[in-house]
Figure (cartoon, helix red, strand yellow):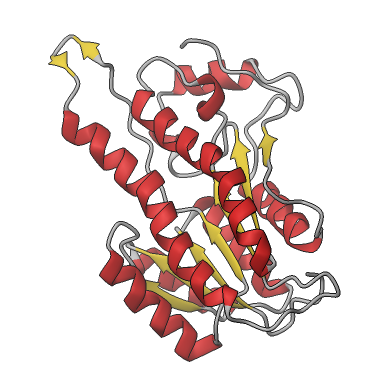
Length: 255
């Protein structure tokens, strides 16, 4: 899908970080962008800056996603592009100084990162499946989910996060296979360390250690580099059912 002028796009977690930069890039390509975020203050600021629609949405709630989808559809028409960036990063050891890990913590991370991603995907995909095709191959839409290299090399304290992103990785191919009959492509991007507000929560010494372990370039990825890759995936029709690492060649150690 190369001509994006007037194409409706939805970006979850669009109020900051990778979601915000992806929304900016899509808007610059002429897309009619809807920013879905539970933090509407941040999302509204981005939306006003790029001429997008801000929609309050809790990705873990079917009702909230259906309402957000209706608002976006009414404003821009059915979406042909979905980029799922909504997520949280919380570290917790399974058996730490304070005893066993809190089950609520594990469930919350899985619910937002994995269930939330699938919840949005399933409803937007249904909308996409009813659209007319836009390419000679019969493409109708593209879905890109944010995974993480933690899906492959989760570190100590990242059991919940790694499991949630591992779920996104594992469901990429089967969903791509299923939705292929509708001309809908499904991809995932697995970033390493990205310089976002989420990573600002990580202690400085750990951030320094992560940066030192990246072969090249020895720095965190920029949110706009995620956005640039997302745009390339949208433009390249042969990219489907795959996970692309965005990590400078890094592999996470145990800590």
